[in-house]
Every structure is written in structure tokens, then in C-alpha cells.
Image (cartoon, rainbow, N blue to C red; front, top):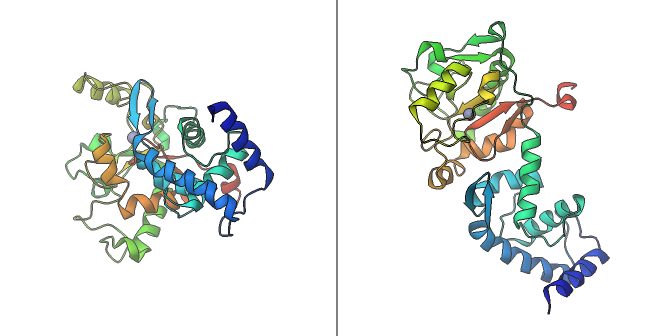
Length: 284
Ligand SMILES: [Zn+2]
């Protein structure tokens, strides 16, 4: 069948009966269609070619926890349920609803995740910053000038940390007062507020690094961006490293819970979280 005709047929057939919502059962016909979509998803999660800026990317398996959170499903990409959730997402956004995360659908998720981030990026004033205790940092030898963080962000981080420590499934090593023990690295702070001057020095140290790796206008200028240790090499974007990070229980916990504390992930960096509480949340 010619591709164009196939698209018409698919869109007509998908347009007839709205799919049942998550948790409900699908008709036999929908199941057949979604089974095909789920097969495609299980391939594309490793093979889809797309790009971020000028950097070529492969697959979307690194973003499965974020996709599941956004789609409000626990189902894996190779399931009919996952494909059904993708289809509903596509319908709501006017994207051809085939239940498959192709590049246009992936970009729609990225656009959504990016919309949650801090903006505009405004340099923190000195009186908005506090110095966090060195023991809360990943590197116990970190320069004492690099421990600053915006006050509200820090308070919210502390509340989030307490909730994580109180969750027995994470098995975080902490003392009675809810502080991580020195040998516990998960959820410690890797990097917080960075001054434009310090950011420039990072760029000089790594002249080969891309713009994306060491941004000229960094969210860290606001004091509201936290690099949090989630496993692996703390801040390395290699797919292998991010593959380790997105599997850790701590990262998965953050994806599910950080929003309650006003933190949103930069999808490409599992460690980078920005404090950007939404108005409707703050009103509660
Ligand atoms: Zn960061």
C-alpha cells in the first residue's frame, strides 16, 4: 500500500472509536493496531535517529522514566498500554496518532519538558544566596566559594531529601536527624550556584566542550539549578553513563517525586534539576 494511503487508512480507523483510558481494556481491533505500535516502539527506543542541536542522537530509551511520568503510566515501551498512552498524547497535541514515538512525537515531549524549566535566567543577587554545608556536597573537598545556593531552592531541596530518606525503598544511609551519612553519595549536591566568572573558568578548562555542555548562559547563574548525584559519573552526558543513571532507584524516585517539591529535570542531564515551582502548586 502506498505510504500516503496507509496514513489515511490508519487515521480513519483510529479516528472512529476513541481508545479506552489507561487501566481499561481495548477492543480486539485496537489491540491489534497497538500491538504493531508497541513492536515499533520497542525497536525505535534504541534506533530512532534524531538530533539535539547539532548532536546526532540515537533512540529514546534514556528518557523512558520521563516518558512514563509524562504519560502517567508504569508500562514499558514494548506494551500495548504504553502505545495507547502515546496515542492519547498524540491526539491531544494534534500529532498523527499512531501510538509510536517517532521523531515528531519525541520532539513534542521534549518541548513539553523544556517548557517546565526555569526562565528567564536571571543572575542571583548575593542576598538571595546562602552557603550550604560542605557535607551536603558530593565532593567533600569542594572549594568553599562554590557552596552557594538560592534560599528557597535549598529549603525545597532539604524537604525533598527528607522525603527520599523517609522512603525505605531507596535505602539511603542517613542519621536520625535526616542528614545523609558521609559515605552516602546519592542525592548529594554536585554543583549549585555558579557565577558567570566561574562558568567562564569552566569553559577555559575544557576548551573542547560544546556549548551545550558548558553553557554561556547557565541556569546555574540563578542559584536555582542543582546538579544532584544520581549515580555513575556525576555529570557526563555519554549515553553509557546516562544509561547507568536513569536506571538508579534514586533517579526514578526524582522523576516521580521532584515535581512535588518544585523541581524539574533537564531531560538530557539526569543530574540537572531546576527549582521552578508552578503557580498552581504554590497556591496550595
Ligand atoms: Zn547543571
